Amino acid sequence: MSDEIKHECAVALLRLLDSPAAAGGSGGVAPRSLPDPGGTLLSLLLEKQHNRGQDGAGAAILSLAPEPGRPAWWIRRSASATALADLLGAIGRRPTSPGESLFLGHLRYATYGRGDESFCHPFVHAEPRLDRTLFLAGNFNLTNTHELFEAFRKAGNHPASSADGYLLCELLAAELEGGRGIAAALRAVLPKLDGAFTLCGMTGDGWAFAVRDAHGIRPGWYWAPFLDGAPASPRAVAVASERPAIQAALDCPTDAVRELPPGVALLVSPSGEVRFERVLEPAEPRPCVFERIYFSRANDADIHRERKALGAALAAPILRAVDFDLDRTFFSYIPNSAQVAFHGLLEALWTEGLAEGRPVRFGQVAVKDAKFRTFIADAAARREIGKHVYDVTYGLVRPGVDTLVVLDDSIVRGTTMREAILPMLDRLGPRRAAADRRRLLRPAHPLPRLLRH
Image (cartoon, rainbow, N blue to C red; front, side, top):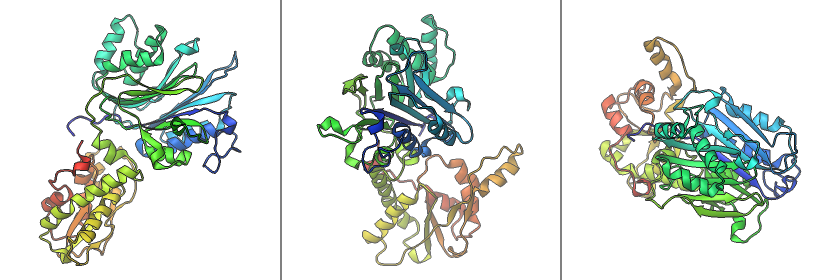
């Protein structure tokens, strides 16, 4: 990819449509006996997406029946080294309020911007009037933040931050203050954005919404099976960046969780009415390969098939690269994400007859020994320690005899590959030179049609 990757985060939105005491369903992971089914379900939606953000976490919980003189919502953010754990603990310890029905959560992957809580979602624009109070969280990368900042400033406002999430929240809130409803506010603001986004939000008076960019670049899924006319237990609307998170939290089948239509807002009114409204003009679908390969969980039905197809498509080129010498070739992969693609590679070798009945030697050669970050100032010392994040399994590869083929499906592991993984694999002494191994690890091969976006 040519553009800098900035935000690949996770969002979670939950709207309970029955009373909170009855929202846990029967036989699922949040039984009716739980005192806090909404907080439990939000925690599960976030925990099942922890792969998408370890650098910040936040949640907002809104009551539809706030008591005058007391806050109408609860909100927490954390940018600590244990942000998600801190947030889940805070959710569990919070004092619950009557009428809690709206739950918004976010996990941040901080590859851009500072690492303090001011950059953590949800962003909030607070007003005494609840219909003009807005909470916003998203997975997005905007390329025209500077233009939005200047336009907001020249309109007579004083931006308190240059963070894109803050600006987007304030732009939408300004439309609400002008008397527009949330759908009209989305139609007024979203066409001004240049970039990719999945946004979830709620207003203080009980509206909830979720929307993706018109190209569908960022992922978004929803669960609202009662829209088909069939009752559901629990009666709720759930939105998340990953389909398996909704399936795990709400115990629902794959086909019940649907992709948010690009450019179409899912809206839930304070009374619980659910509808869809188009807020952006239709555009060519362009889902992000980076999201689907690197960030998405491999236990999603489609992601699993796509990653296996990626590995299967490499079988024939790899065989040609090793001169079809399977007797002196050992196959492996880089943990953990490449495991599913590796299964696809092995299946192609066996089931498609590419191995011609010969045994295929394989095993886990690379072992991720520890995940750590070092701040040693000396560059040479830092490189020497950093490359030991990975270790190798000795005794599988015959030194000087075997060609080692290692599959890696990450598209952001360039420095780690060069400075950590390849030097560690060198210790095994395979017969191929480093340049040849690098060619095998990253074969010049077009992605299968299924993955071309």
